Length: 251
Image 1 (cartoon, helix red, strand yellow):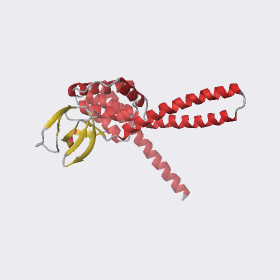
Image 2 (spheres, helix red, strand yellow):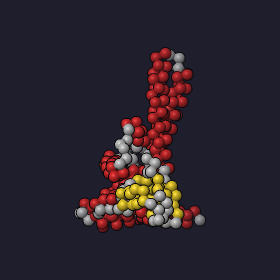
Image 3 (spheres, rainbow, N blue to C red):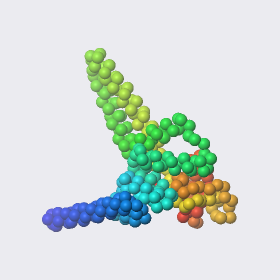
Image 4 (spheres, rainbow, N blue to C red):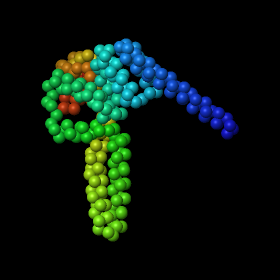
């Protein structure tokens, strides 16, 4: 029985390895197609690689680039946003998303962000919530260890050094706490992206309702509820309305 289980485990591992190699091959083929300027084939190959099990920011970023080069700005933004959830501090990715955000803001006449808000956003986007949580956990443990050592120390110079390091750990805890809180809240948002060229945002769930404003492809929105072919969406500035369910995709 033990021998059978060992053989079965080896077969499962071998199958997983083969599947991983096949997905990696599709990814490499997608990169080659992109470099050759064949953007639609690159999109198809990247999509197959994602379906085969690759789930990382590099794939989503490249897939977004391929969609953008193929003329589909909505799905480009969708995959850039998916990449951002995994690696929010990638410079090229941030530049692409900030450009799209600026274009959307200009089309809707949304005022520019104030400095404190912009600072908190940059703090939030230094890393995903998982990494912020690790930094927060380490800083908390470090604080308690140093506090214990501080209380046990008898020599004044040693106590001063331990106090200094404890202050540093307290500052790290504060920054990590804010970073984790803001990032975790963002990752929990029911966010989506407009994938249609333009979308009329209506006052109710149906074409009989008045159009309030239009959203361009690539706009990041919050999807509050969906039903009967329509979704209630919200933009962060507080603009609310209803759109055709087929025009938005969850991140």
